[in-house]
Length: 198
Image (cartoon, rainbow, N blue to C red; front, side, top):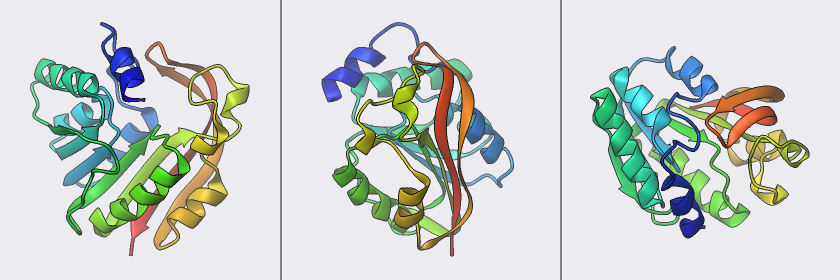
């Protein structure tokens, strides 16, 4: 998978565009500025947008090419982000470090999700937010992107269980129109969640 993502991110064009995810932008715009974590951040579109708003941004991805593109975008926009190359398994959180954690199209095999999600909850400050958008298990019916392996896709029920210790204020699946670079284009079935640590 690392070779796959390095190959995709090595392309000259930004695979998912340079603008932030719409749901991320709408949500982060309404929150007080603080410390933000973005796992599996790819080419940095969300990280750079948040940094432009004044957020202190930490991101990671196992793709070095993704990190390089993120730093390139940050330099173009005149902002600073902290971005490391590591896997979700290697991520070791500091307890109660972040005000917001954003998960955007973070599609991992089920065992890796089961390892990562509790670590993210630990890393979240009390009253901190998890914001998530990803492809629903029905997404393989559409041609707008995402894994074909249903076990890597999301359902409302699975997210409800995984984040049960948080207060979930929004959890829905819906049909949207994606316009995010060459690889997220067209009608898509997504799941969105906002949850707050008690």
